[in-house]
Length: 346
Image 1 (cartoon, helix red, strand yellow):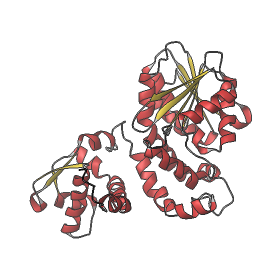
Image 2 (cartoon, one colour):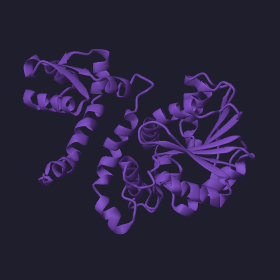
Image 3 (tube, rainbow, N blue to C red):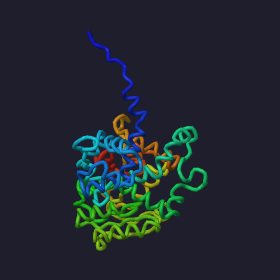
Image 4 (cartoon, rainbow, N blue to C red):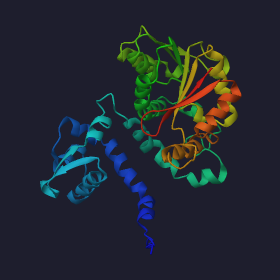
């Protein structure tokens, strides 16, 4: 006889209180806790309390650090007064601000911007309208962000944080041997171009974005000493199209827009490519059954918050649009975490 499973509220309570866990991690990133511990591991709670400038009780400090330990973000030896804390392998690599592998930019943006706006998810679902800085201003979010240097820097650091691992994976996994030129449309701080050029010495890259991104892009190119193979070009591809290249990439660009605009962007990429050229969209492509890539589904809701009519998509969606534009074939390449490269060949 089959035993019937007993109902349990555990998963419901864990998910319902999930914002508690998020805020604990985001606060630790904001405090640069993992950066401090990368410099000097095995710190006592008392030392960390002083270092971070916390005025709460010792018990509050233990609770904060022990939550991070229970989540798997810190290692601990001892207990309470005798405890010492260090980074785990993951937090040491990805949340130490001094390392190039730092992905905390997206977490900083979540803490500074998205935390507040996601409180308006109900309004977003009811109205279908954006819920961020542009909510009451009548301007599009990108106009608001690009006109505010501090907001722009926070946004760019966030996008770099969420995409760095993907750009590195693409640069190493995709076969660039038959291509000589690449244009990254909406190239932001030029990180994708830098990663591809660094890992593929025969490729010349152009990072293409609006003029307000030019300074940050040039800083990245100089940092990696790639001035000879990565060009920074300013422009608006909606108005002027893209420079010709063997490969056109777009990282977290398509999902900002509604379906018609997505197809228009893919057409702009198609027109810039030669026969045999490749268009690569790097995003959190949702699995076709819409059951597995929960981060992709949540990112799609984030596009409601940020843009109103943008959304993330499945590989089947991408293939349908690619065929409509005229691409001959498509391919999906998993990258880092929940992200993939959706590739269309001309």
